[in-house]
Length: 334
Image (cartoon, rainbow, N blue to C red; front, side, top):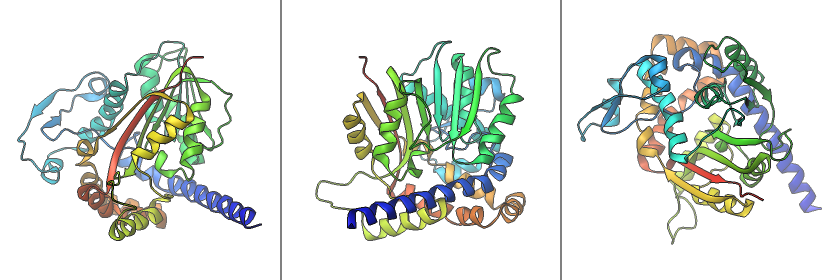
C-alpha cells in the first residue's frame, strides 16, 4: 500500500511539474524571443575571444574571433558584446556542440529536438546538414505553435525537408522505436523529473548507429568523501527550482551511468561551464533595461519570478555548484 501511495504521489507531482513547465514557457517565450531571438539557450563564449558580428549567414558558417586579454572577467567581457553578438554566440553553441560530438547527417537523416523551444536548434540542424526531416517536441503549446509559424516563414531550410513541432512529453514520446538518426536535447534535461526514463526514451527512439547529444544543467560531481551537496548549495538549487520548475538536480556522472545502463556506447562527457560564463550576466543586464522591465511586467508572475533568480544562476556557476555539461553517445548497431 505504501508503495502504491508513493507512486501515486510521484505521478501527481510529475503532472504538476509538467503543467508548471508548460505555463512558464507559454508565458515567458514571447519576451525571450523579442530580446534574444529564436534560440532559448546559452551562448558559446571563449574567455580569450569575442565573437564578431557577421550576420546570420556568417553565424551559420564560421566565426571570426578577436583575441582578448586572458585577465578579462566575464562581467567586463559581456558589457562589450551587443545583443546581436550574443545571438551569434547562441548559434555558435549549436555548431560547437555538434563539432564536439562528431555529429553528421545526410539528406535522408532524421533529427529529433527534445525540448525544442521555438525551434531554433531544429531548423539550424536541418539547414546545416540538409536533413529530410526534423521534429521538435515541447510541453508548451505556445512554443510549438510559434515554432511552426517561424518555420513556415524560414527560407534557409531545404525545399524538400519536412520540419514540424508537437506538444509531447519527453518521458512518453509518441514515436516508434528506432525512428531518428540524431536525438538532440539542448538544456531540457534539467526539467526531467525521471532522468532514467528520459535517457531510456532517448535510446528507444534512436536508430542503431544513431547519436544522442544532451546539453544540460547539472550540479557539480561530488567528491569521494561527500555524500551530498552542502546545505548552502542545496538551498541555492531549491530556490532556483521553484522559479524554473525544476526537479532534483543530478551530476553529469549520473547521466554517464544512466547512459551506460541504457546500452549506449562511446559515451563522452564534458564541462563547458567556463565557455558560458558571460551568459547570465548578459541576461540579467537585458532584464534590467526599460524594455526588459516592461516585458517582465507584461509577461506575468512566473516570468518575473524566473527573472528574480537570475543572480542565483550566476552565483551557482561562479561558485562551481552549477555546471554546464555535455554528453554524447551512440546506440550500438545490431
